[in-house]
Length: 310
Image 1 (cartoon, rainbow, N blue to C red):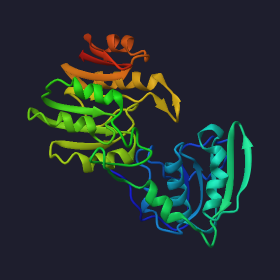
Image 2 (cartoon, one colour; image 1 turned 90 degrees about the vertical axis):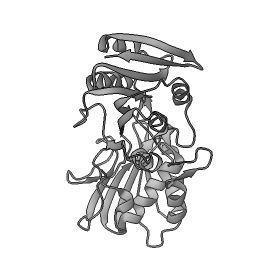
Image 3 (cartoon, rainbow, N blue to C red; image 1 turned 120 degrees about the vertical axis):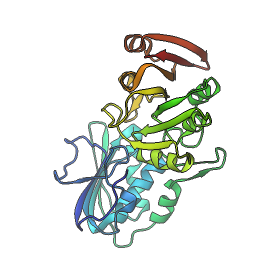
Image 4 (cartoon, rainbow, N blue to C red; image 1 turned 180 degrees about the vertical axis):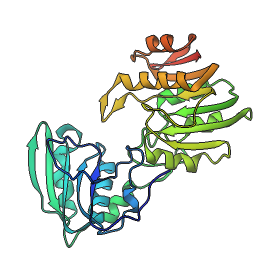
């Protein structure tokens, strides 16, 4: 469940996990990133209620302009905003993007980052346009709710498409780990023998969209980091997953391997894992170490679908 507003005026905001040596923020700063479970919802923050914010700019242009516009809207007039990002992940565009909002910007470059500092202008412009552009919406080609910044936000990624094509009939209690906007979950819940499905994702925006897309009383939704234990989730009959392998824009093969181990811990003996992954990712060893049996169901288009028994 997301945390909403009701905050004291003049709080200080933090968005993401900026390198501490590049920016400073008070220890009491409120976290607003949708990728940090339990963080405060920036969309719900009252206008003019923050005394400052430090933001690690998201990598996507639409997503970044949306977050910056929300941050500026939430700041008191004259309050300072520091936005930084790696030069090759939006940092080189930060200054111009802030100037579009009417900001006067000072810029620094350190450790491959661009660091832009500004104050919320009295005559801010362009907030509404950027917020509308980055807000949740129904993607017409999918017929589903999604939002820029969510994984594969406006398409079904090839890995999920392959798993959908080869998804066997499932039954009992299960989970969709890294559920995204709920594409796999909708297919799983098409089976009447499924009694409960828990959708888990690190991204609050994905969970919010999945709630809209998966209107089924058997579904429950959990905003959580699967690298940590998830409360009240155990003894499952099946798990489906298209695990992520990027963290903060960089490839992290250990992330998908952590999903495999988490799935093994959630399943009852004899429970099944259905996993799709890019062909080059080294999951075979961790699958074999975590499960009693592992089989390759299909390999196509640069992806593999595995089935494993706990």
